[in-house]
Image (cartoon, rainbow, N blue to C red; front, top):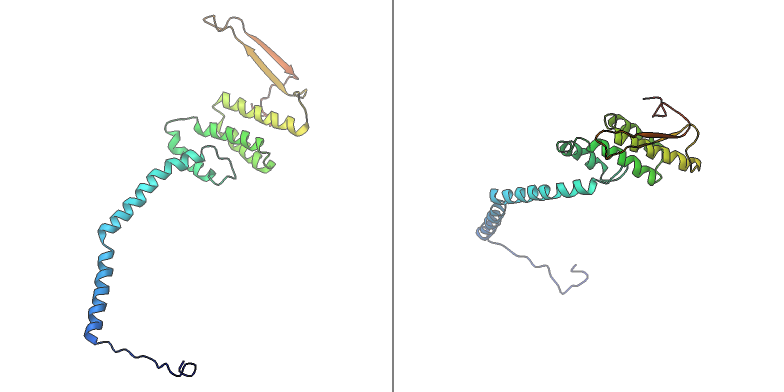
Length: 188
């Protein structure tokens, strides 16, 4: 530097060893008092409070997610907790996911996996099983461009007189072909 600015000479500062030791001791003391067990407790309490407040928000946001969505793993993780209060929640979620994926025109692979998952859990839920099959049938019709059921599909409507104490006047109408298998894969 002296060759660029010859008039400037390096400044040398000498610090008294006693002053240096006092300054270093003060710095060490400040560092030691800034991280106390009390501040660690506060930090831990803040993290715990944030977690407790965020979990329900994440669970609520994940409620409408479907396979492939960012929040879907959270939805699956929260289901066992929600299932304590609602036994049908898993079956309802799986059927809703199939309907959502079909409406989003998701890939056939993703829809097929979701249908398999849904069929595994709707076995004991006739209404949800029917809803799932309706969604699958509608998707097949959309794929083939049909607006009416094919001759091999069966649509059943049941009319019951609800004013009577027991179903007296029950009429069953079958549209389309007759099939005694509610599932395309032969499960009954």
